[in-house]
Image 1 (tube, rainbow, N blue to C red):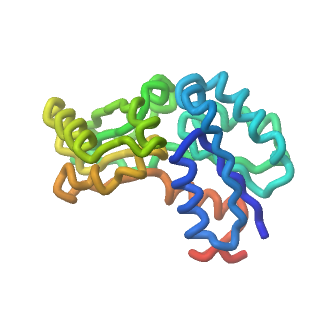
Image 2 (cartoon, rainbow, N blue to C red):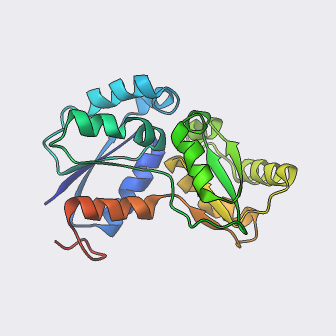
Length: 219
């Protein structure tokens, strides 16, 4: 059985591991969730890289694939790990892929650290659409602890959209944590909005990396 490690700093990694296991049941999915360093991994990528390397050393070159289910880690450190450990396969949870469209508006839910990366700037430029970004760092711990309430989600997102005068056709999630609140986000805009969390893209990359084909992950 192929063995895959999913690494993250909190509940978002659990969500993606569940998704991966459901769609590719032939895999043995090992969850490596570094809850203790969650704040560092989501805010300080250089320190996060060291902590991640320490957590993954027992698995590097011993498993078929390592997946970073953390967007900040993926865009800042994936190349580093691939260069340093060329015999280990790595993939990352990168920004969701959308078609360019000047007629569609997008709302991005993300964190401050991600918005400071050149990768994020380039991503928005390639979208070529009116886009507004809302940073919600405080929600990460609240989701981890089960403390984020529906009313806060609705009020925060609706008020931001009204203030910025945007009616999004697409909501882009650049943090796996936010996949937990997709039903609430959808209800903010009467169900007309499409939500993109990058899970499907990561699933396809996993299949390609492991040379799997078909929905059940056949060799």
